[in-house]
Amino acid sequence: MNCNNFNKLQFFMMLFSGFLWVSSASAAQPPPSQELVFLNWSEYMEPELIKEFSEQYQIPVKEVFFESDLARTDMLLRTQGQGYDVVLTVGMDVSVYRKRGWLAPITTTQVPHLKYAAPRWLDAFEQSAKGYGVPYLWGGLGILYRKDKINTPIDSWKALFEPSAALKHHIHMQRDPRDIVGLALKSLGYSYNSKSRKELKQAEQLLLAQKPWVASYGVPILNETSGFVTGDYWLGMAFNGDALALKELNEQLEFVIPKEGTGLWCDYLTVMQASKNKEAAFKFINFLNQPEHAMRLAQYVQYASPNQAAEALLPSEYLKNPLIYPTQQVLERSETGQPSLPPRMKKMRTAIYNKLIR
Image (cartoon, rainbow, N blue to C red; front, side, top):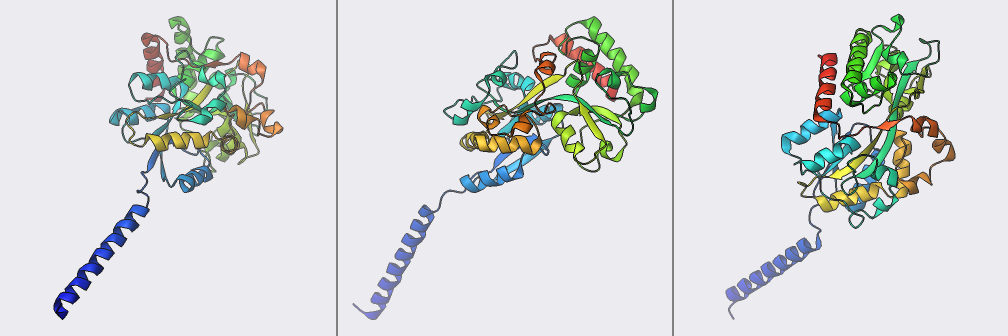
């Protein structure tokens, strides 16, 4: 063999060996993970849990936020549910999204830790979330107020819906038609889910009379710039966990769940039917429902956990806090909003709300 042929042979052998090394190295590397897109409320997740999940499964999680239930629905309508993998959904909307074909079924085969969910929250609504949603957290609404501005203890929704003259321009209301109208009805002694046109008309009159006293119909801010902390708001509607977070920022804040009861809610984790990353989505939901993780989540956001195994790990003082876990008396006077109201009733409630915010 002449020298030139030998050198060529060496060159091709080295090239072939390099190809084999690159191929085997590539095969040894796991395929790049697909980013998981999670549509959620802002400040409604312990950041360390996201980090730990991503490290354990090598799946990055991107949180996208919505400002209200209506805003979340609008976001999903624009894409027909595409572009999101896991969506945090209030119980009243699970059946709505299911009818639209947006939700993928969820079973204990895909999410084994679903077995810890309290049956109460799987069947909390007329059109059950069972099979399509995994309970995340639950709670209720109450009245948050500045005790340095209001000397008389508050125990009734009437303080909010029939305010004193001193409260003009110092009231904050949640930007949510269901709760605004539903709790106005409660203050009048009616059901949160009233189907009476006469009762809804009375609630409308009550809310329109209250409107000049309202400084803002908006989304709660949970930091030092909140109007409750600065003193711009003296009284307002608030979710219990949000109220407890704000109380930590100002000792003059007090929170109460009124004697008439409240509107109870439960949020659910759902998987979009259009998701191309369903396996990762199920892993994520299962991870969050591991009892230790669900316990940490509840304490971080200061809401009640629907995970029975997580409750067993929570401190007794947490479970006995009536602002997190309402007393049985309050629960008996409270209601969950139901999605099955007649269309004319839903339309009427929306019309009342629109008169308030325009």
